[in-house]
Image (cartoon, rainbow, N blue to C red; front, side, top):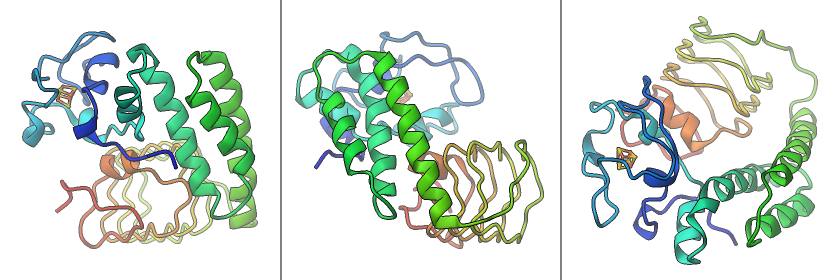
Length: 235
Ligand code: SF4
């Protein structure tokens, strides 16, 4: 079984080297791909690990390689493959999630084979991503049944206490939305941008395709109900 959780202790800091940053609310500085972050130590540790948010590196708090880092490190693969394998591991994670509700074994096998390939064509990933997205959509509709649509831009929306069960919020911008006490059980949250969304008291149990990075980017606390592990920075 492919590991789909990051294990930084088994990785040579690939996300801190191979990925680019753009100076923004998520990163304090610009960094090109292939250049080690200035905060990376010689033994692949982060010297500001315990103060990333205060130091302007919120993007590092929410990033998840879905296990691609340890795969590339352990197999001594070309580190340039890391961003591509990370995309494939993310697809594997979604397919694993979806397998609880429908048939994904064929796509899981195909995605795993591509991730294990010594040569990966980014165009193949794009084509595969389209088919995975379509399958996830079919499974989501089957699980949710007929449900209302929400408008696309919900940034800052006041959705406190709303019944959002079974609603598709796929790809929606929910940046800074007030979702306190909202019921999001079986809502489709594939690709929804939850940065800064207030999910205190919200019920996210059974939400479809909710990832660890999405949860880490939201603002929750001990009253938030969810199936994933609670981020350490939630209080
Ligand atoms: S700040 Fe730390 S976690 Fe973020 S890229 Fe740099 S070394 Fe890695």
